Image: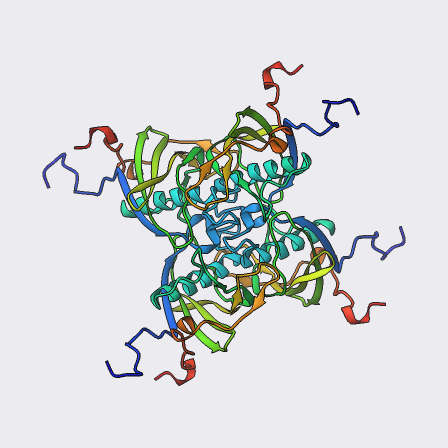
Length: 152
Length: 152
Length: 152
Length: 152
């Protein structure tokens, strides 16, 4: 191994999760309840971390990643048993936070757009939450995705 | 009754809901899961409609109010058994949509800020959702709240 | 104070919680999802503990009360905005566990019957969960309700 | 085609679903909330129906399958990110109802045992729910699983 060159590791900037709508996620309007889209986005985030070799919330964690801001725009509803894809992309990375965008797609059409920003906090010392720098072994696994517009 | 003068009715522009955190709303980080704040905001919206003498989703409804955009910023976490208040205000009213802002407060401190826009659709004719004008008997019950800054 | 006679304290054997169905609790069949009835029963349990002056899960707890068995029979569905009552009763009390029955009633008719047994565990020493004796200051607040059949 | 011999079709009596615990399914005790196990069991049921070529709740359904009774016993907790298996088996089949048992297993150990009985109702004519015979094209796809004890 060449000194100073770290062994190759996975660096991730986007992730695609395929998922099916479960019955308990629908409401009396016959569609997925809007609050559930935030769960889909987080599910994709956690799967992306696993794909990067990381667990975002291990039981003995010294840091945590609380959500500081999030949004969704809804274009088309999802129904029971629909198969859909969450396309998650890292849009911003700072020393203390990560931002994602998410697109929910069904049959090639966009059902919803979301955003999510999470901050790194120390889990030592209890409340109140104290912001801290994202540990290198985590930060090194992620990078900002090229903007959608620049894709071939 | 004077002709042309409608009988007095309730017109609402804001609402305060007091609520306690339930155990099933917390997550393994020991705090309310971020997706649940959207349920709190909607719970306050539906209570505001009831206070205005309306049910937002009766079983035989001819119109529905799907959510088209929503967001939350999180400032302080809520824990199991915390009592908090949702302060919901109407921020915009058009012929076909309503927008709200929500502040989640605990012990006089702001825990989170949310926004929500809902559109009026016809429930006749099935999918796809078709935008329609908010019926007068609903629209007349709501008006935009004075902006926070202009309060005495 | 007469020696040996403890100051009066609340001893509880049953509790009634009034609640309204929230939209996010319904499913595409237009009724409350069956899994939500277990949340209603637990909500009534926690309110009963608060009525007894106790918090079932304080942040610094030395004991916890995981659920060990539970059931529900469903007789009539609940719909969005329905007001209903959870009638919770203590049916068994041992040194290490408590059992409850719950009746969900709407407009004087029974919608569902549930049961729940919880065990007392030590939260010290991490997993695996270790059964322990219910602390006296908790156990003294609860007693088995007289059986329904013996009521006048 | 030989007279009297029906074309081959799938007949199912059990199903195994592999699933991972999502963060929003955990609670402040650090484990999966007990109400969520009922969702896992239903998720396996619906996947079993799909494996049999059926959708348990299509949008234009003439019959529905409300839950009439269910239970769970909890032996070991599940934590965030745990991978587990739901082993669902048909334990009873009548003209108007189906009963299942479910075992939740993690790392070869049983975490929980559940049961579920669903009835067939007509969705025509609105409330109240009216029991009806399970249509042949559904009933023919399912049969009772051999009892666990008789397995080699």
